Image (tube, rainbow, N blue to C red; front, side):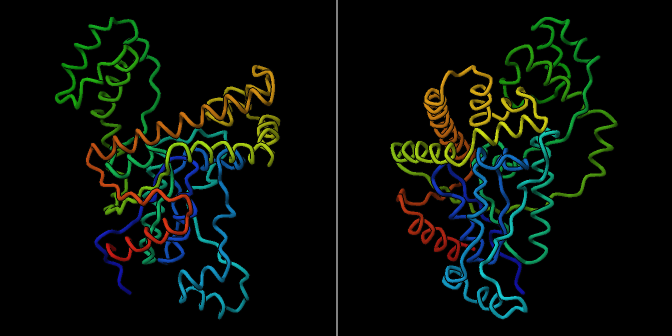
Length: 340
């Protein structure tokens, strides 16, 4: 079986509410691949409605599979157990609970493990998501390593003035990547602590034990829609999620042990619904209004992030801004068949 390709994975990226999951799942089925989620909240079990997991999108009818991938459909129909649908395999969804604060290092570690597993079986990873930092960390190969807490060093540095901290950072770090590291005092302290840890024997020993990263050769496909259409889709989806039990989902998470601060830190739906349940937001109507605005602003920030990625050298092949998923999927599949 031929595994070598010019690109060895596909990224389907875009802002919230534009249908990227449906496109990515269908691409995975058509190409015999598996999905890796790049969503910072779908990693948590129990965060279903608010995170937009939409696991039903991963269940495809056999009729649709027959159109997308006839050989796959034939293998399903000839199996010992008759299948009624095809479940597209996915990774990095429901991998931890709220007792663990999943971070960027966790994502990178999970991503490379899933990528290696999928690739070893000569299947193509299809990465689907809109969490800009997660996507960027793979596409631009962030050098991430977990840093242990060091309250003593933090307290020592916190006693110093801004100018003293700036002098320390310049003296200790041979090459400053950019002056944003100067930032505020808190950022200076963090930069010094990271730099010192990176130079420590403990860090070097940790790096020596790390598995080598697989080579990532990504075909990045972007999908978005006219901003007014994105707004209307956000509004319709928010109404549907509230009807599906978003408020009850957050109530259950709190009842099961997640405190309000933890839920609020998850942002957007979980933050605003938590505030509503604590009576910080006076009505469901006001909840809808505030949350709708916040999600719109989030979608705009996602678009800005993707433009920033392009400026930093990430090539994104944008699909036509057509409302229906079908023609966008067709364009994405044609692109993959041409370039893979």
